[in-house]
Image (cartoon, rainbow, N blue to C red):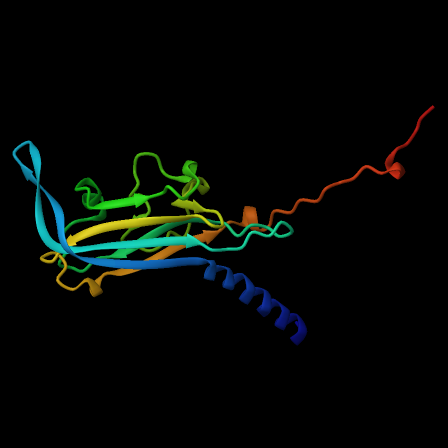
Length: 193
């Protein structure tokens, strides 16, 4: 391969990698009193505890150009690594109402039904998904989603120990989708007698 071909391949790779810059994140941490659901007999009661609330917004800031394909993020979700002091899983946090996922600014049919915490995971991103099923949510340009969860000070004395990753893939279906209008001109018409 010549240096010119190698350079153009590297430029193409850098361009594709730069698409990930359109997946923006914003994190906000609020310290104060939080609600914690604790079991009481066959029911639950809500106790106020000092703690923190972590809000993570994930947005697709890609431009929309009529002449270019869309940059759409698929399988978008949040990976969370909680400190070892936290003995609850993200599923338990969702059951305790201490985990919320706001999908009001997304295309609603993309979300998993009934399990809003589906794409908050402790492990890494999967190398493949069975039958090419979605492993998260879809963000078209100008769409966003928010994750919000709370931890008590006892569970997490130092909120800086929480590690977060926003993950997703770029949709090849949208990126490589090309459409060209075909015009019928007089040269196309054949008259048969």
